[in-house]
Image 1 (spheres, one colour):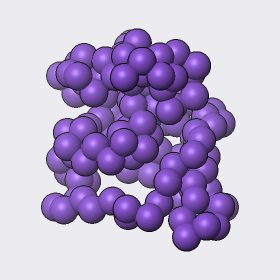
Image 2 (tube, one colour):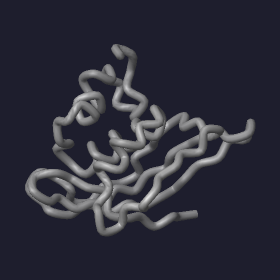
Image 3 (cartoon, one colour):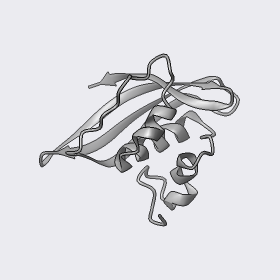
Image 4 (cartoon, helix red, strand yellow):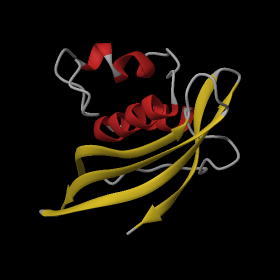
Length: 126
């Protein structure tokens, strides 16, 4: 896949989130957030499950086939660098479902364990 990555960096998928999807750990919490968003756009449930902390991961993850993710806006980040063990990313993910546009605004928490960032949980915002 040589087209632009869905996460919004402007980079080709193979040079961006494709690396994480192929097994290279995301270097930051924001990079993991972007790669998880891209996994949602691609319907990659395996990647989403692998990068979700086991303490908060759902037993079964089923994606809505009618939901199409259209754009990701990163609103803020706190910590989450390779020098941290925790970080937060606030984002707005835009989507369409049933012909209607909407968005998900969330402040997500991430933790780094054994050198890998994992999604822990998030608070939905208005």
